[in-house]
Length: 151
Length: 301
Image (tube, rainbow over all chains, first blue to last red; front, side):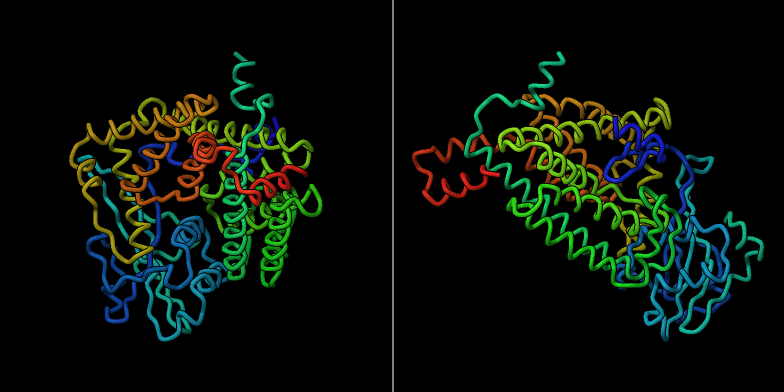
């Protein structure tokens, strides 16, 4: 009874109670996120949206920096308004000392089934983070950062 | 039917054996170790969080942001470690496990306040709850042990069936469409890329990606395994359901790179009749005086 009451009033989750809804919605478009080191890549190339097998720069394995990749993805794709606080929150996730002397590209990845029943995964750059600055993608309209629906 | 199920879950009648007691204490040791591991992992992770994005659980009623920006998560982790260790040896208050559960819940909701949750710790959490209720409300050791076993069997069986029902409610019978598996493999591939910097499909992923029927069969078998999870409530079915669930988890690991290590270890511990095996290997005549004494001490709570 307690389980039913708690999960029913808390969207199915009240740890350790759960209705275990993972993977319950089939066929939905998904959104994840990843990071690339684009130190050796020109900005014009870095800002291009590409498929996962055409990524520029070198990979950044997030656990090497103490960051869980699922947390990072959730933080990025659940942010609808990238105000100053959220951008600082993103930098805090990476930790400022890890960004020193770096040029990291934060990307959002969207996956879907196309008309030919093939899976498409498209990575769109959101920010370039350096030791002292954060740059937004000039190819995205400014409004996109305040009601983010990357296509 | 009800009585039969009750006896399969909470059979208070038979005398407890040495094997069962050892099996039970091993499970308890596993749960305590995992609780301590989680609380420190979450404690250190909370130190780097700045704000609460999505309050869950008790965080909807208590402002857990007081845990952020200070060493409180580590103090909580230390406290959980101490009280769980004492509770394992039945030292101190009978409410220690319950206190640990509440503190660990607060650690969890703070750790996962960044917008996403994970289920890998749920079985350990449910087991801790079983110990919390069992130790607090059953004073006779045999009844305490039998209640805790039954509690854990019930909620683990329910978890798998609940997950299967969620899929039917969420997607209908078309959930088993193999194309859905393709999407999830790609999604988890993106996570893997983010985690390790590289992603290359293994042989199983290539097989399901090249054959829609195999992908669909894969999902169908997974769904059936989950749906029949409630059979875990029956003693005779338990090892078979455990084997099915283990296959399910390895299937998820090889297809989607998600490794539910806690679930796997716990299924291995509780899914098989280790107590019977221990009793056969350790007949009472061969018990050492130290073991006998230790088990007696454990029984006097």
